[in-house]
Every structure is written in C-alpha cells, then in structure tokens.
Image (cartoon, rainbow, N blue to C red; front, side):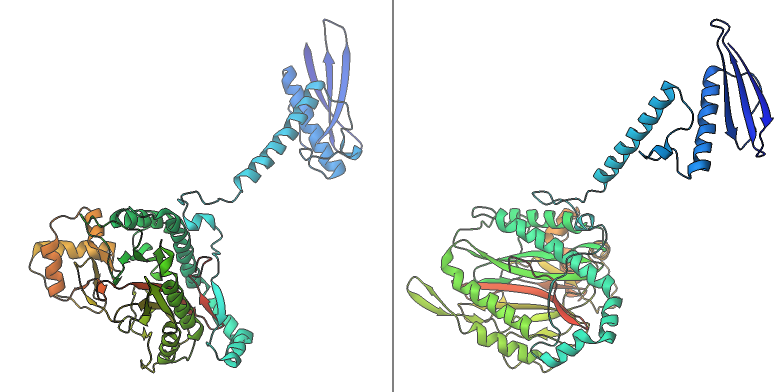
Length: 481
C-alpha cells in the first residue's frame, strides 16, 4: 500500500491534510480530510502512523468545536465523533474510559482512613493524619464561679488566645488518646496470675507503639506504676522481680505519655473482687470533685478541702468490719510543665493547704489517694523510680561509669522519670554503683515506693486538666473514668 500526503489550505486559513490512500490489491481508493492546527510532516509513513495522526487531528477538532476534553466521559450526542473512525479506534476509547473508572476506584480505596487493630498497634498520629485529635471533656474554666466562666467562653479575646495555643493542645490530646487506648486494652488484658513484670512490659510495649515513640519527641513520660494493696505509689518491678498479681489485690496502674514534652499523667485502680467497690467509688468521686473545683483563680487549699469532705463520706466493709476511707494526706496532685512531671505547685487532697491560686494556661494532674489505713505513707521497699534533678547545675564527676551513665540518661530520658528496667532495656549492665553515685551527688533523685501500714488497702484515680482561657479541658477523660 502506498500513502501520499499532500497539504492544502482551506478557506479559514487552517491547514488541511489530504490523504490519498491507494490499495493496489483491492483497487479501493479512500480520501480523508482532517483539520490540523500544526503542520503535518510530509513523507512516507506506515498504516499505524496514519491512524495515530488521524486520532490526534480528530481530538484537536473536538476540543476546538465543543470545548470538551476528548478523554473525558460524556454520553451526550454533541461529544460524539463528527467523522467515522475505525473499529480499533473505538475500542481504544472504551479502554481509556474503563481505565479512568478503575483509577478513581483505586484512589477511593487508598483514601480510606485507618482503623485501630486488636490488640492496638497503629500509632495515634496515623489514625488522625489531619492532626485534629479528640478533645477532652470541656468544663467551666473557673470552677464553681459561673459568672466568670461564662465571660471566658463568650469573650472574643479569650477565644483568640485559645486558638493560638492549638498546637500544644493537640500535643496533649494525641498523648491522651494514646493513654486512653492503651489503658482500655490493658483493662481487659490484665488477669490474676500474671507477674507484675509481664504486665508492665506489655503496657509499655503497647504505649510505645501508640504514642509513636521517637526519642525525646514522643514516648513514655515515666515508668508504669503498679503499686499493690498498702503500697500507694512509685512501685514498678525491677529485673528479677517475681511478684504475681492475685485475685484479691488492689492494683494502682499509673503511667504517662508525652508528645514534645506535653505530659499526660493519668491513673486508675484495678480490682477483681467486688468487695473493694466502695473504696474505688470513694476515690473516683473525690478525684471528680477536685476536677470540678479546680479552675483559674481557684485557691489550691479550697480544692483540697472539697476532696477531703467527699472522700471521708465513704466507708468500706470487709468481712463484717467497717473501715473509714481516709485521704492520704502527704500525697498530692501537682502542676505539670514541659518535660517536667512536677512543675512546682501541689494540689492537696486535705484541707489546710496553700492559698496559692491556679492560673490561666497551667496544666495540673488532679489525683487523689484513699486508704483504709492511717492515711499517711512513708518510703519502703526497693527503689525503682529515678529522675534527673530539673534544677541541677554542672557537677564534676570522677567515675567514668557515672559519666557514661549520665550521658545515657540525658540522651534517652532528659528530665523525665525512668526506672532500672528501662536502663536494662538500653543494654546497660553493672550500673548500680554509678547510679548511686549520681544520686549522692544530687544529679539524680531516687523515688522509692510509698506505703501505708501493711494489711490496709489504697486506691488512686487521676486526670490531667488544661486551664485554657475559655474552658477547663479534662484532656485525659475517657469512657472508663
């Protein structure tokens, strides 16, 4: 087959490509005229080249005449071809339309949001890729002062101030969501017969995944407390601890998460025997009372007085004997700072505390402890919790082991609390002498377990609150407590 292409000009000034196609075998001669904006290249081509050239010219004509993209899907008669095309070309267009549909479907599938696994393993930041994390419970910013609280929620100035802090609010909310999902899983996971070591390792493994652990930018804020019965706080198992959780134990689970140093400090009490229900109810009610009372310009001593009144209104009956439930007077809530779990202010849980006021923009851990014992704790048992002194200046060290251990602590924990299990996890060995040396020099502070009298039972509940310019946000609040 011979193909000759000639160019001639039409009346509109456009170039017209005239193709004389001669089939020497059949004697059939066909002529096609197509409009083209650009010059066609003369010369001898193959059959496929002519078809491709006709397709391109046809597409150009469609855009010019109808203003629609020829690759788009349109069922209107106006968008049909003005000139007859071959069967191969029609099939090609159908394939294009199907390809576009499948691409759209694939895009929809890719855009489908992630869901949490069971057990939870997906990082919270991946579940909320837009960075808008669940907001905690919103309450009046000024405690029981309704007039001032109403002003703050309606003031345009306060709302603007609130919006400027959205980034660090979201840090708290992300850490809080990781805490909620971790504790929800652990509440169903923990069973009598498990070792305390196993429980803490599983909780921390889950929490690390959900928080998206990343050096000092995101991770655990302090070791998991799992204090039992008369021990109220600061117990976590060291390596080799074989303590087993029993059915009639009262276990306080206290752990923290953080994003960029914004710490969530939140705790609950776990029991299996319903005989302790009244103890848990008393402490939970006292904590919620403290949260309700707390607010901007509220005196800390007023919060403590309200907590004590509620706590002491409960009693616990075990085996026919009635025990008054007492607040543990030397344990307190506290303010929280950046990378600093105890930022300076204490929130008492008994009357007669400081008259210092809470201030706008501050973050507090409102926690209460109830006991069937004396209502007073003292240091006891082997120390497991440690934390670098926030205000320590440079202290010269002579022991090479102390220098090396301090470097490990600075790189991995900074001013956040840690425990011996975490040093073991980092591959540190034979470090007790160096750790004691750092404690003696005041660089590291030890925090031994705090215990009431043996044979009594203690319980704890705790939440983190943000005193925003407009609202008080109980950022760690969940469906469980």
